[in-house]
Image (cartoon, rainbow, N blue to C red; front, side):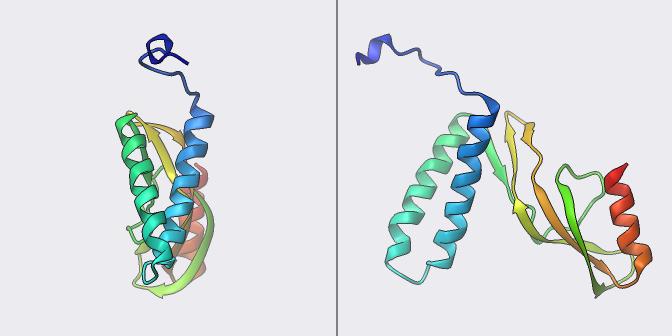
Length: 132
């Protein structure tokens, strides 16, 4: 195919962009688990190149793991764990699926697991705020 006949901006729908971003995120997690091996080097390089390409297209993948939980966050809370944290504190223990944005707009909200203070009040509060 002649490169001159291809439009400068190829159309890609939000579902396609989100799927590519999600798979890149999954590959990055695999690459992290292989960081002490030579096998992981090629995979980390490929992930880095795909991530750079996605960013150049305005697509960003956000992993919220380890961040403080805020009820106004975009990701869906799929599980709340009581972990004996200080009262009123909640953190994102794990990202099940990352949030994907395109030029700052959310195209895939993602899913997270939240850890919060022991006691049903705090975990109920997290779920209630998420569902409102």
